[in-house]
Length: 361
Image (cartoon, rainbow, N blue to C red):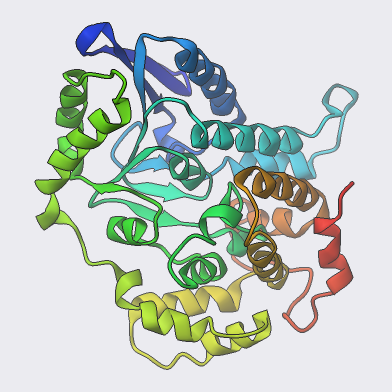
């Protein structure tokens, strides 16, 4: 197997066309998105977009466990905590977020069918990659989440765009709790388009190779995916988000973050998925919860490009403010699971400190 972080190949298709395949290839880290991966993907996607012989692009992850389990936050931690040298004066974190969001936007606006096979973990930065695809496929193994509040960050990678487009206030709930969703949830919330069994992946590729990527390339892809989805219905789980929609609406019905968090804390039901979500809120960074609340409401009417512009500003600030570094330390570096958050409670969060994240430089 190649050691390259992203493996590229081109599959022969009907009519002299080809399908460009990109496979994230760091399975030991659950294909965590690194700066190296980003710098491999962006130019190749540009090349395929300009090549008339490429009829469609397919993105997947190596192995059966993950498309991508998030950004390489351990590398970001090193950048946040190691002393700067003259040869390393520029922040690698700034570069990472800038280039990551450019890649996400590139996928959102891609001029050809962009199929994402979202099997296994699709977390954080992985969801940023999948959300922009024109044809987003999930499987019986898919697990989707935006758990950034637990590491002192906030839902980014375009989350201000896609969380606001979810039914009701489910996007707000998922951003504040980091709750994991299955493939059926991803379809219900608008994060995915098709549910297909994972063991059909190679058959789907073969069927696409026999498709005509002419003037109706998007329709040709949809026709193939629709056929395989029809044969996968028995494997599709129940959507827990759909099942608990009314409860989620009630829990998030508040005029302030404090009201919503109080509602969550008073949940007295017995559903294990909701209980776990409530426990996550209790341990999350109060500053991150506040950032998430404000960003969600600030981007309600924004365009996609406006959302990414705002998120780049917030994320660059996050590299310098200490909360993100502390969250990563507690979860992944020292693994003591005892983060010392900047503000111990929501009541103690300083609004002026939060405002600094949103200020234009």
